[in-house]
Amino acid sequence: MNRLIALVRREVWENKGARRTTPQVIGGIYIAFLLLGLFTTEHFDNEMYTFREAIRLLASQPEELRAAHGYEVLLGSSLLFTVVLAFVVFFYLLGALYDDRKDRSILFWKSLPASDTLTIASKLITAMVLAPLIFWAVFILTQILMAIIASLMVLSVGENPWTLFLSVVNPFKAWAMVLASYLAASIWFLPLHGWLLLVSAFAPRIPLLFAVLPPVIFAILQIWITFLKTFTLNTSLFGLIGDWIANSPAILFVDMHDGQGGLSLGISLTGDFDHSVTLANMLDRLFSVQMLSGLVVAAVFLAGALWLRHRATES
Image 1 (cartoon, rainbow, N blue to C red):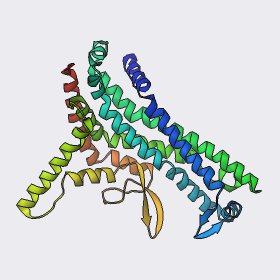
Image 2 (cartoon, helix red, strand yellow; image 1 turned 90 degrees about the vertical axis):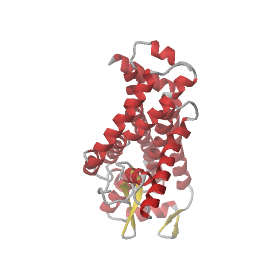
Image 3 (tube, one colour; image 1 turned 90 degrees about the horizontal axis):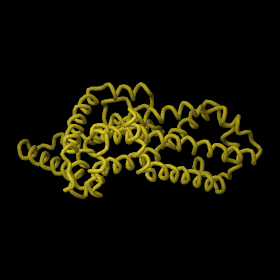
Image 4 (cartoon, rainbow, N blue to C red; image 1 turned 135 degrees about the horizontal axis):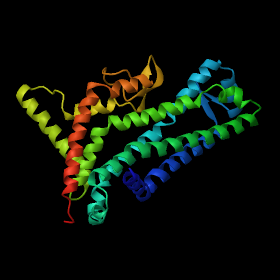
């Protein structure tokens, strides 16, 4: 366990820029846009309102409506964090085993008293647990700072921020839901994590090319062969990957119901799962047949990555 912790610390130290600086930049962007919005004219219902008028309009709404809107705002503000986190994890895993071979440091790391299994496990833990926790913590700090700034501005126009939104909206429920979504999505995308580590273990150069091209070529050949046999375009690898992303337990998309927008888990393109943002729907995905199939695929990819790591050389 101590060796695993040491390896995780190594990953944090070597990649602190992407996982620490990046979410801080996102938080800064949110705060900058909040300040810009507070000091400029706001748009509500296609009419022009000053900030003072907008706050008074908000105060006139029922408490239940303010609570519902506030909860959606808290969840919705995690979208940019979620998207950037996905890119950070993607490129981190893509270079996780490749960089050691590229800079010829692999013999040094393999000479240490830590197995290749622990090395790969440390990279998975960093990508699936540590990175989401860091983004989530910065997300919470950003929302606290935004709440303080908004409260000061509300006080400046003579309204009470406590009765307006602070006592109405439960941020802890939203924060817990975002964390659950991050961790559930980490498990859901385990096949992708395994594939990226496999590519990172064998790619001689440009791992991004090796990660993208084989699935694309395979999917195109699959579509072409199927079309020649049946003259129909049946489900291909593209469709399977698309459905997998659409059914993700991550809070990703604004779903439209009867002309009204609302957040959803994944993208409502399939009828396989309920896309409402609830903990039960996240667990429903994690205990599904699709998840079981994904775990089998992930195990194959990770076993391949471990096998290649065992046989990695300086050449």
